[in-house]
Amino acid sequence: MLNGRKTSLNPTSVNHVMSKSIVATFYRFVRFSDPAAVRESIRRSTKEAGSRGTVLVAEEGINGTVSGNRDAIDRVLSAVRSLPGCAGIRHRESLAEEDPFRRMKVRLKREIVTMGRPDVEPLVSTGQRVSPCDWKEVIEDDGVVIVDTRNTYEVEVGTFPGAINPGIESFSEFPAWWKANRDRFEDKRIAMFCTGGIRCEKSTSLVLGDGFGDVFQLDGGILGYLEATPPEDNLWRGECFVFDHRVSVGPGLERGSYELCFSCRRPVSAAERASPHYEEGVSCPSCIGSSDNVRLEGLRERQRQVELARNRGYAHFGSESQPARAGGKRQKMVQP
Image (cartoon, rainbow, N blue to C red; front, side, top):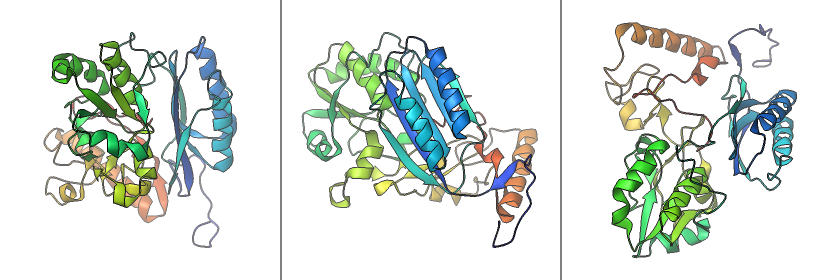
């Protein structure tokens, strides 16, 4: 029903009526002896629940982002917590004006967050967990070096003052950066952080395995910090890039001001959207000139369809598509 009027919709349409949806994210490092069986179990559970999203399963654990109504989310989380070693798994929720996913994908992977170092074992050792309320004391200590383990385009959206930016385009580049820069950190205490905590599990494990002792990680990541920290104690500068429909969030996890460039999948600020190089759904200052005329026309046609659907009160499923970013990489909708 739209605006009080009954509406007949074609169930095969690529559009659907916009409605509130719950988006839940979770991860757990745990040793699965049969990850293929875990994948099938989660696949059945998500299908029965009617949820959508992406769940990655590997020998080292599970990592997922799923959406649906309250019942669907509760059923999926119950299924995840019934897995061996996952009873106490934590999750985070947000509301979406429209379902950000078109389908449910449960994939078997080598890693639930790709570092490319199978010798790194978060189940064996990780950094000392620091709660959001104690984080300020740690990072304001003159003897502590702060490292942002995220990708460059994420750091540009926001970070903690004084944090080192490794300048990487994907997490798999972090080990090489660490190897080239480890001597800078000799005899230092190191505090590391990421979006939701999963990348810090591996990065701190890597550093500890390289012989460093005093290594800390922000428990719950930036999202946990922004959710729990009152404004007067908040040291975060800027916004936090997130791998879902919100693009960025601020204090209290309120939706931020960034949008996503559909062409290159990079976050675009309000100032960048005012640039003559920005064309919604087609290009932004980061990727202007990188597409040929055929691709540009395809992007413009897609944007016309998105705007038509928007004017009619529908959500266009094409907005969930993930074209290659500049450099040939793709962003994932699971929270890293």
